[in-house]
Amino acid sequence: MSVNIGFDDKLARRIYAGSDFFFMPSRFEPCGLGQMIAMRYGAVPVVRATGGLADTVADLDAEGEKGNGIVFGEVLEGDILCALHRAGEIYHDGRLASIVPRIMKQDNSWRRSARQYAGLYRELTEKERD
View 1 (tube, rainbow, N blue to C red):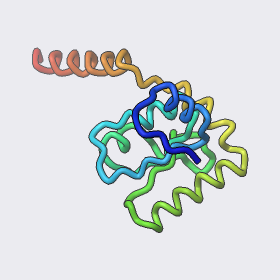
View 2: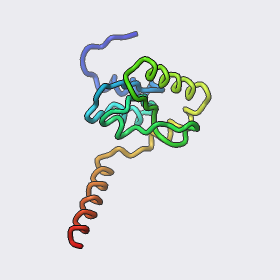
View 3: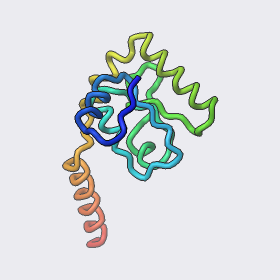
View 4: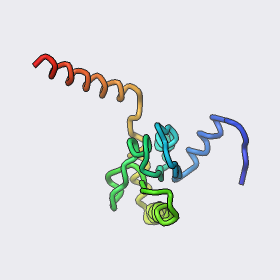
């Protein structure tokens, strides 16, 4: 166990890269970058369905073929334990090996967001002309 007071980006990225799962049980999260950084480094996010976490993490299906993380509803002991149990099952039954490469390829870049905004803008301005 280690306690490190302060911000060390290099250490943080090493921790992400060395993790199989990233647990973020936020009560509220307006944006959240941790889960996206975790996915880029191959750590499956385990998050509460709130704010930016709900916007960026889709619950994995039973086979682990769709979705990109484990999502739970409330910050309650039962919900958290159920989510952590699911993570343990994914780890032990081998599904993690197919999930990790897929989530690492996700495009969470500003370039992708800009394309989406540009498309929405075009759609809205075309409707305005009609």
